[in-house]
Image (cartoon, rainbow, N blue to C red):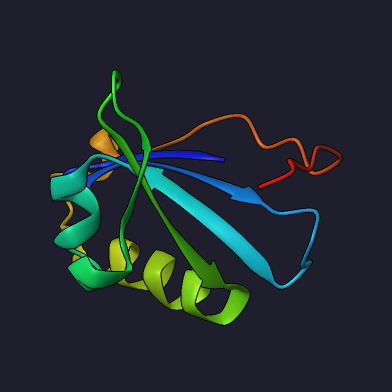
Length: 91
């Protein structure tokens, strides 16, 4: 799932190894503004892509915070990408 808000651009994917584990991808700034920097790791240097592993509950809390932080003027900036529940990725 891709999410674009005023707080950043993120992509969330479920890992195959652990069904309770999700990988949130984004830029360094977007991730460290929402999570502890010590948890963030480099995924792809040429694209400046970073990631963080979270459990489903932490991801739910994160998504809730994103929604609560949106004021009525920003709803048009909030976008969810196509959700394909049948796809899982090995991470």
